[in-house]
Amino acid sequence: MIGYGVAAHGGVGSPESFADGCLAACESAFILLESGKSALDAVVEAVRVLEDDGRFNAGSGSVLRLDGKTIEMDAAVMDSDRNIGIVIAVRDVKNPVLVARSVVDTPHVALAGQGATLFARKRGFPPLGRVSQFALARYENLRRLMRKGGFADKDLRWRGHDLRSLWNYEGPYDDIMSCDTVGAVAIDRKGILAVADSTGGASPMLLGRVGDSPMVGSGFYAGPSCATAATGIGEEIIRRMLAKSVYDMVSRGDDMRVACEKGTAMFPREIPVGIVGMSRGGYGISSNRPMATSVLLKER
Ligand code: ASP
Image 1 (spheres, rainbow, N blue to C red):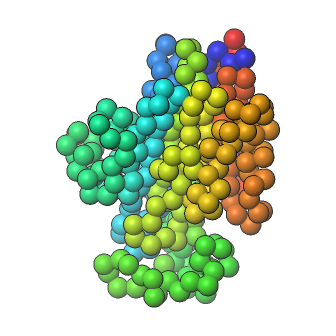
Image 2 (cartoon, helix red, strand yellow):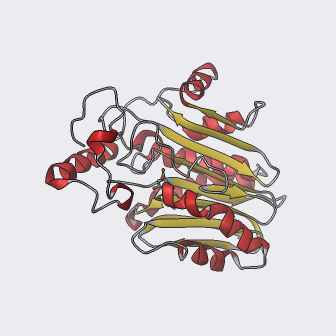
Image 3 (cartoon, rainbow, N blue to C red):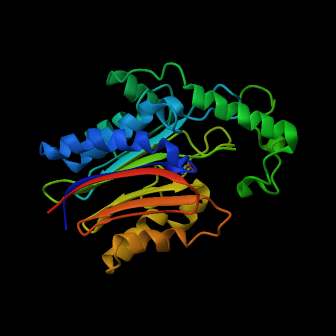
């Protein structure tokens, strides 16, 4: 049995050599758990650290949209006491997860677009500032891919679709694959379970595109049985409601580790997907591509 603990991931596809960033996130969250703070505080702290890292596709590392200018970010928090806060397509905010946490203290559970951005400004959350070198490099990779002949063979969502005819950015079609997301799950001394995630999205994507990360039951879920955080191609995760599917497996008696493995096995190999989960009995991590992760636990 786990007394308290936290697990974090840097997104499916993130190199395992980035695990030091996940460890830093877990260490910062673990200090909070040790001092008696809530699982919600802990996951928010872990994801904030990952957002500020710059190597992951969240916060200052968020992937630029296809116009090379726009950044739209999603983030969510939830705990087993039914606290939920979500921001969708928020712009120009340094730490979307802190804004999502702040939504918990409103009458709503989700804020989107301009309303989310204005809410963040009003609550005094700092603007994004400069995006990281990693985010810029990721965008340059996309452009290279386009010049070489497109990305449809790299990203099955785009097979049979013509980007030029779907282009919805204000600027003209120019030229333009990456995905990653960060997430954390935790359990506190009282046995409350929580999850937080944050992403710049799965590129290439149209303006306004929303993935699984801010969708309850798809990218994240927390309840009395466990907390789960998914990563991968959002459209496919939403079709299978991955986070809630894995949650239900644990509720029906599966071990957390086994449930995570069954979760990723729901996807064909060509779809990158990963999930981390935390229950009172243990944690689980599974992915079908490399994924930077870290876990810190205090056994009972
Ligand atoms: N799930 C995220 C999205 O589709 C991306 C990721 O996890 O890599 O927006």
